[in-house]
Length: 459
Image (cartoon, rainbow, N blue to C red):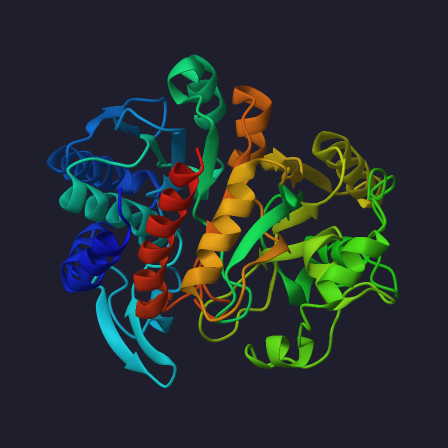
C-alpha cells in the first residue's frame, strides 16, 4: 500500500479530524468521580460508534468499573495492538480555567494554534492521532496495512483497577506482535521520542487524628496536640538536606546510571534553566550531585501532592483541627518494590505519631518501573519513520511518568510495548487550561501513518 496518498488525505481531512476530536472532548469522562460514570459510558459509546463507522468490529466491554473498548480490523501483515485511554483528570480548581474545560476550542497562542480543553493532550487528542491515521488508510486503500486491535481504557486516571483482570481474562484476544502506546510526549518541541524506560508509581493518603473534634485554639492551644504539626513534621522528615528520601530501604533496587546512558542523555543537551523557567522556577531541587535528566528519568522521588487541615475557607478561624491529611506519591525506578516501600513508609510514619494521636492510610495504586526492550525491529522502523516526519531525528529517551500498562503488556501478554507520543512539556496536563498543539495533532496523525507503513513494508 502506498503512503503518499494517505498523507495527502490526512492533510486534507485535518479540519474534520479536529471537529471529531472536539466531539470526544466535550464528553466529561472523569473516571475518578462517580458522578461522571454515565459520561464515561458515553465516551466509550462514542468511540465504538466512530470505529464501527470506519469498518472496525468494535464493542464496549463491561468491567466492575468503567468499560473497555476493543476493536479489530485488517487481516494481513503483522498484528499491531494500539492502547490509549478515554478517561480524563478532574478539572478542579475550575476558577483557574480561562474557559469551560469541556467546551474545546482552537486558540491562537504565541507558539501557534492549540486545542484547549480537558483531555486534549492526555489522552484523547493523542488517542485520536492513531484513530485518524487508520481512518486515512481505510479511506484511501479500503483497508488497513496490518492486522489491528485497538484497546481503549476508561480508568487510567483513577488507578486502572479493572485493567489487569480484563487483560488476564482476554489475553488471547489482546495478544499481538507488538503494542503501541500514545500517552507520552516529544523531547523538546520538535524531536520525536520513543520511550525506553518509565518510572513506577506508589500513592499513599494519610490521615492523622488528634482530638475527637475541632477545638478553640485559645482554650486548647499549647496543651492539646495539633495533628497539623504532626503532619508537618512527618512531611519534613521524608527528605534529608541533600534531597535524598529517608524511608528505610527506599533505595533498594535503584540502579546507577550507566556511562553509556549518561553519554546518550548528555548528547540531548537538556536545558534545565529553560525547562524550569517555563513554569516560573530556576533552581533544580532534587538530589545533589545528579544530572537534571537523571533526576527526571532514572531517580526515584517522593512528592507531596496535597495536604489539608483545619479551616481553609475565606477569612480566618482560630481552630485547632481534629485531623490533618496528605496525599503523597513515590516515583520508582529499577527494581524497587512498591509494596515493600509502602510497608516501610507506613512504619516510618507510625513511629513518628505521638501516643495521643492516631494515623490511618489509604492506598492509591502501586506499580513497578518499566524497561522497554528496543531489539524488536519495530523500534528501528518507527525511529526512521518519525525522523522522516519531524525536523529532528527521533531519539530514545526516558520518561519520569508512570504508564503501568507498558509493563503489563510484557508481564501478562508477553509482548513488547513501544511508547510514542506527541505532547509537549507545556501542555498543562492534569492542570487547568490543558492544551494540545494543533501541529502536534496533525503531525502525530502523519507519524502513525508513516510508522504503520514502515512496519508493514519490512514485514
